[in-house]
Length: 471
Image (cartoon, rainbow, N blue to C red; front, side, top):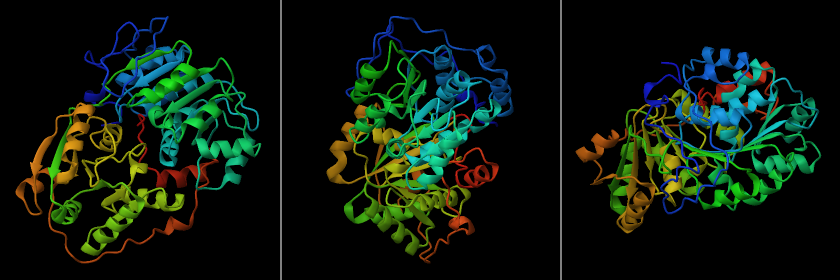
């Protein structure tokens, strides 16, 4: 079934839009939604009724987009009208096209000067930058809009060259964009549409100083859109400073609860945790396993490989080509277990992934929700499992309450029937394995030059994890 046509994800009478006239119930970490003086436009029943260029509508049809997802139906009428938008929809709900179609439609027919993009999407991770670019590329091409992607870990000179040639649409991580601006390779003075994707993470203190400096440089009076699966008090600082009379659309609760997702807390002893993890990893099928630290990811990967499990690590200590290779291998099945830090918690889509395991419990409910959001996407079913040591029980119980989730709790040991039923766990072969680098390992992506067909083809091979309807 084409992505975007699954009935469970289509706009329905049960989805809702929250505005200032409809106060939202707030959890501990949510903020008071801004009060808008202008009522929102009604949601769209179809893409055809939206004021978009014919080329965009034709491309949507070719991409199998029959009708808008809830977040798209709610936000697009206002976004196309130039309103500032604050959008909340669970991960996997189609947010990329919710802001992307409006951004592209409002940029149609314009031509950027060298080094001066017209629209900007800021994202927190390299992988998400590439995924957003890939998701929007066919629509941008239909309007003859050029795009560039600038992220760390790849050639900054190639990215500068792409900006010099001219790009109407720029997708960027804050650090690399700041570097390019400081070099004189990019100016934001012509940016009229600015999007913050994963706005809650962009508002964290690690990003906030750079983000605010960048937002201060875009053209005054332009459109600003903030999208995320969760909205907390840090986002409020950006909303109050940069958004003008924003309309708020919330099609999911902050917890992002998904009816097709099961949540399990598996209580294990310290002595059993490693074997339980290995048995789960040896299941028949792919799984993402989250750990807290880079060294923990590398250590677990080594242990799994020595036990006969085809595993690879993904974390911020890896070079971008290494991260590209690992995602490609996980996507095509050469690797069955992706051991990752939170770098993989956002912006990575893998078709058919039905299990996520928190080997180390996340630090807060937002991390839990975003980690879990790698499964049960686009109407598919999935399971999120967290291994909980006795000393972690109280904190995990509090986290589940904050997230609005009622999990199943089970005491397990390696070999238990319940562990096998929930996760598909089985003993590993015990025969050590080695993951070989593919032949494409030597080819380094530039992160730019998205308009050249050979570069596009190489990127598509590495990042076929992108999804056509947005995250």
